[in-house]
Amino acid sequence: MTVEVVGMLARDPALTQGGTLIDALGWSFVAMVSALISACLGAVFQPTKQITAVFLAFSCGLLISLLCFDLMQVALELGGIIAALTGFFLGLVSYVLVNRRLAEKGIKRRCSADCGGVTVLDADQQKEKATAMALVFGAALDGIPESISIGIALLENPLISVSVVVAVAVANIPEGLASGAGLRRSGLSLRKILTIWSMVVVLCVVAAGLAHSLMANAPAVLKAMVTAFAGGGVLAMTLQTVIPEAYEGTHDSVSLLGGLGFALAFCIVVLFH
Image (cartoon, rainbow, N blue to C red):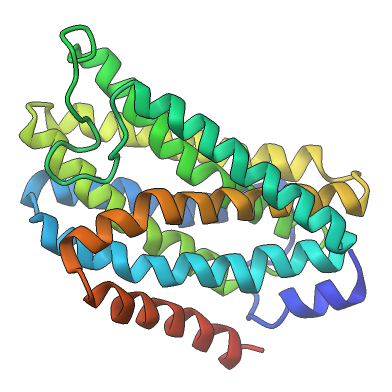
């Protein structure tokens, strides 16, 4: 990692004493566990679609700031513009293709507060196991790129960016709230809902650990491509999943709420530069 990249990542205060595997696993868990907690709250209190849409709109700005200030900038300084753009478009296309496949299985609207991510299903898809596994894969598809970015950020730098952890953690809240509420209304027990989301958190934490371990001795260009790959996935997820759901519940307010989310992340970067 170049001196410039270390300096950029160090703009935020240290949240950890060293960039070890335990650090990567721990901070990935901190960022992702908000989804599990939110799913629990959503299942218990069952917030309306309008409430979850407000959180979704706010998270749009956070995710965009994460993409701009952390993922793509780091990728650019690690491996140059070609590596950054290559990884970015690979991540974007991969998300689109996998998301399309998942949509065919009945989870096109994973954040929906009406059905908890399960749209109109045929008889077989309504079976409990298929429904649960579809939601697991869908939510993991959103969280894995974000967790990978945390694992890579800790490879050679003992500091983890505050903006990354905050953006990922807050962005997970609306999806957890909406799906928890919807799945509870669809008949799943609280225990099963928590089991589903616990599996998602574990999978994302493992992804962060694997990224940290397998990329430790990788060339800078490869690290740049993997980091940008995560950025492409985050952008595709924001455009296809978060913004449409947010707009349905907030309409024109989505711009203001998204701007507030972006401003919060921007202030974090500026204050701790």
